[in-house]
Image (spheres, rainbow, N blue to C red):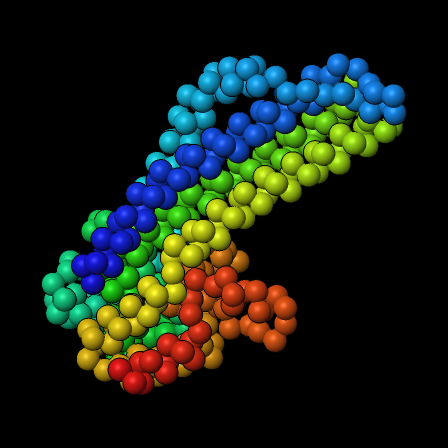
Length: 329
């Protein structure tokens, strides 16, 4: 477990270092594209614009905007990172759960935290007849275990202890901190890339028409703009895949093992996973939050090409495989 925590901390640092490099690289690419299409030395014999890249000008402009980009992203990241608890709670419509509200759940969480020597996290509940649970938070002040009312109604005490033990293991292994970091990064990358592509498209869709009435030149510009848009989108998507794989499937197996050890009954956790897989809830339409669930609501859909790729790039391993391993624990 100690080595896993160290690995998670190392991945968090790598994400912190890799994110600015990818973002600033995308900004430079955007500025280079703008520079290239705004510099023209005329038209060739076929009527196409002869554009050129002034790298010195691009680098100078990049250094001018660099402090603003870094400052804006730093503020954005800080706000999103430290307000993640309230944003997640609002997204799933969770409410804090006190001992007097449900002594059964509170006592299970308290007993498990005492058994593993960790601080008591916040316990939240979501009014949802379906079944699911997840852990979130970046430190002891924000660590939270969230469960649905359906989970409480349809699992017995041993099964519920296994699920909560699974989520507490995510917290102990620092999985939640790494996941929150990746969620914030992917959100910023996706938003910035979307804005850049839209700005680039609008600039050359309207600006290109003003610069020249030559249809061939304009057609080429639009085609190149579309290509740049595809490249930028590919960068954002690649980063998303990298962060998904950083939250590897091994973490779910480790959390299952930790949950089974905490509750002392691997078969109870296997039974709980079987029940949850039959009716997983909390489908709020946000895949970044769904990544935290003990079972991803969409990870069970299959039988099609989209289902195949969904499983291929899923952050969660097969539920059947998780159950099989628990039953052999």
